[in-house]
Image (cartoon, rainbow, N blue to C red; front, side, top):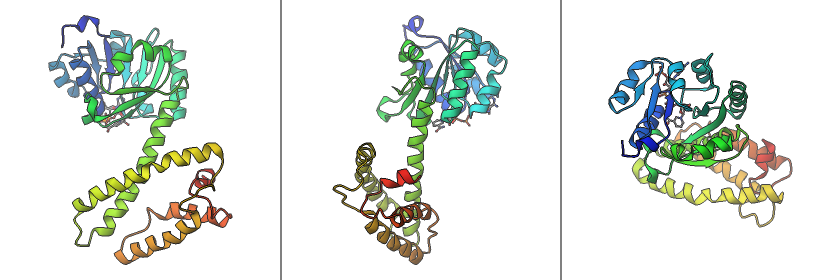
Length: 291
Ligand code: NDP
């Protein structure tokens, strides 16, 4: 702890899984008085040695600080852990991954119990927490006043990006990025499968994939501009008719390599539907409308 401990906001943290433990260590290092609680008490032992106060119950933990952070498995576990606990005057920050709907319902639930509420979606894995250069950050939405009041505490583990008063927006942004990541990893999985039985080292393909994904990533800006203008056909460099024809080559290659096309097919079918509806001169933006 540093000499400024007395100036740092006391924090209560509920949940000491991989993410909660990383958060706890960062707040302790930054000098925040920290009270922790975990359903399985053994996980708190190392943090106690590092200076955390360990509460025996969630109730006791919540009572210890105005700022209460939950980082539990899912929304249901938040409801379970906080059931029947007095939240009057508390600032509840929920870093548990939720859906936008769950976050909105949880915000109403917290307001009904007298607490201010901020939802967070963590865009980092535990080893990135507390390491500024790692680039991790948290989307926050809900009470702007809570965010402003506790900003320095919230920024200790990772960057803080506030996306609106609607409590569901942090989860919406979080899940939008995670969903894009899922598609990206599906493509990477297929790419590695294609070379699996060939004399091509995965470590040699890896940097090529990274560069290609980076180069293609900038297309996201074009899609956003087209969605906003409604113009899907001006200056199209790669039209849908050409891309659907190209898909056949991807599928024949998968067949030659003995690789299941199951990760590619759903997206390709969507492209075909858009083409059959007469949109062959568009780029891929129309698939957003189709979904
Ligand atoms: P873990 O599985 O490591 O930990 C889960 C935590 O939730 C444990 O503290 C567990 O307690 C607790 N828990 C589960 N069910 C209940 C319940 N019914 N009542 C009380 N406590 C419960 O998960 P992480 O720490 O990795 O993740 C926590 C949150 O952070 C999740 O919402 C996750 O999506 C999010 N997150 C995680 C990332 C990661 O890479 N790890 C990345 C970004 C977000 P116990 O120890 O008793 O089982």
